[in-house]
Length: 451
Image 1 (tube, rainbow, N blue to C red):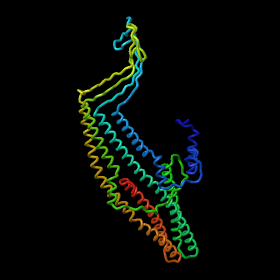
Image 2: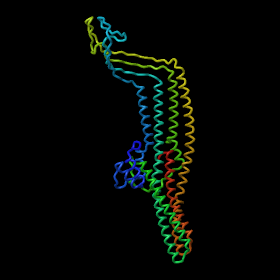
Image 3: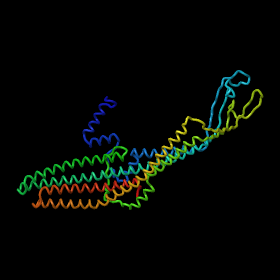
Image 4: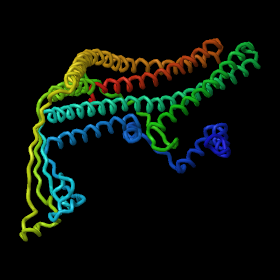
């Protein structure tokens, strides 16, 4: 044993880690019980739906909202009458007299049976304020769950399209490595024919080695992005999935005036600040109402007698009487002195209310600034897409023509290498630009919601 783990378990885990991703995936399948089969095709909407069911931070926000909603129900119940049933038996040592009364004067006999229903109603302005505060806190939790949902969309969009672009970059790296290998073969043939210097072959070989290393890095990045997405969307470890490359589908961007109106109406950050101020105001009301009296009413119906029966019998007078009956009590509680605790609660609540006002003002200013920034970012990312696409097309044509010119003896080896690197950079930049626009739209929609 090592710690709490058997040596055999640690050895198996070490073998999985050392043996590479393929063995690790097989081990994970054994642990989770998943079996290899046809890969799952994930769309972005599928990934969002799965992430909402499995992502812990979002689930925590939804749980917090559910708890707040139940606390509102409990606060409302405190304002309404309650009905209970009380049943009990009290035995008291007899005092030895013929009447058979108990030695404790608080009890009305040796045997006392209690079986009665109780209707209770408490009337307090403090309870009313507590209910209003609970409703405000429920609104806070609801807005926070919306923030979590929109933040989850940003996370999933970044992870999903990060996987898509990583696959693209891997394909680009494969193409670049193949081109570099073909160019290296061309330089070797031209050198053997005496048409180029040996330096060209060396440069082509260096370019080939660089592209091979880049291919390995692209493979690693593709695996990393797939693992991140898999952890995010699947309840058990699963790498057997494919993603849909829909980056060419460009979403429409509304006008700034439309986005501003939507953000003003449906911004969850602002809703949190407004609801927090309402809750703070109600907390002040709760504190002030602790100075006011409270009234409670109780109505009892049933049996509280020496015999467990609807009718009783007095052996001294030989008379029968009814045990079944009712009683009612009313209690008025007046707060007199508690060493300044109530006044301290008022001061504490007032401090929290002032802080909530500051946070609301800050949230309003931040909403305006964030909206301008995120809208500008989405607008810029969208406007650059066409330029990036043209650059990728031009780089591909330049690389093709430069290679032909080199074969004809009209271009240098440096020009060929530069054109290959330019093509790789342009294609990768196009993918990054498309992801940037998707993420920018998701960030903008954290303020506005879906367009």
